[in-house]
Amino acid sequence: MSASNQTLRGRVAVVTGASSGIGEACALLLAERGAAVALLARRRDRLDKLVDEIRQTGGKALALALDIEDADAVKAAAVTVKATLGSASLLLNNAGVMYPSPIEELRQNDWNKMIGVNITGLMNATHAFIPQLVECGTENVADLINISSLGGENIFPTFAVYCGTKAYVNHLSKNLRAELGPKGVRVSILAPGFVETELQHHVTDSTVKNWINEAKNTFEWLDSKDIADIVAYTAALPRHVSLPQITVLPTKQPA
Image (cartoon, rainbow, N blue to C red; front, side):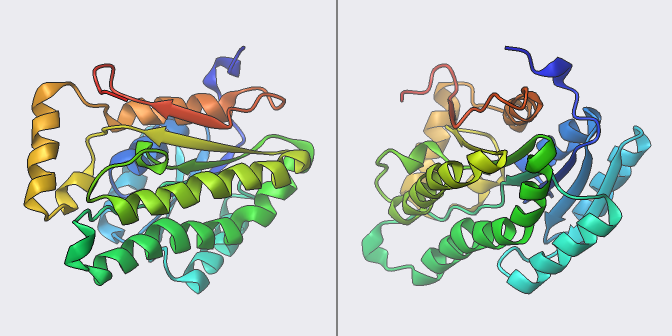
C-alpha cells in the first residue's frame, strides 16, 4: 500500500487549532509535502509566525484568526480559503480543549467550553468546509480527519465530559464516513494516547496533574510530529484506500 511518496501537491488543507501542538506540526508537514495550508486558530501572532515559517521554505499558507465556536466566522473563513487557495480537499478538525475534574465539582463552565470547542467547533468547521470536500471528492481525493482521543472509547475517572466529547467525535465520524464515502470523501478518526501538547497545561485539578506527571516520568510520550506523520500518510494514500480509525499510543502506554 503506497502513499504516493507522501506527496500532497495540489491539495488545499485546512487545519483547525493550528497555532500550537498537533495542529502546528501538521500544518508544517502538510506544507512541506506540497499542500497549501489554511491555518485556523485564535492566536493571530502564533499563526502569522507559522505562516512566515512555511513561506520561508517555499510553502503556501494563509492565516485566519478566529474562534472556532463562532459559526459565522468559520463560514467566512471557508469563503476566504476557496477564493485565496482553492477548494479545500483536506479538513483536519484538530481544535480541542481538556479540563478534567471530578464530576461532583460541577465545573459547568469547563464542561461548556469542552462541548463548545470539541463538539460545536468541530461541527462549525465541518459545516463550513463539507461542500468543498464533496466538490473535490467528486473527481479527486478528499479527506475529513477528526482528531479524537483514546478517551473516546475508554473510561478515565475525572475525564467524563472530555471523554464524552470525544465519544461524540468517534460516533459522528463513523456515520459521516457512511454518508460521505460514496461521495468520494474519506473520513478518518485519529485517536492518540499521551501526546506532549498544551492540553496538559490547561489542567487545574491536582489529582489529574499528579497522574499526568507520573505518566511523563514512566514512559516516553508521543510528540506532535508523530501525529503529523500519520495525518500526512493518511492524506497521501491512493484515492480508493481509506483508514477509518487509527489509534496511536506511546509504545509503553497501557491500553
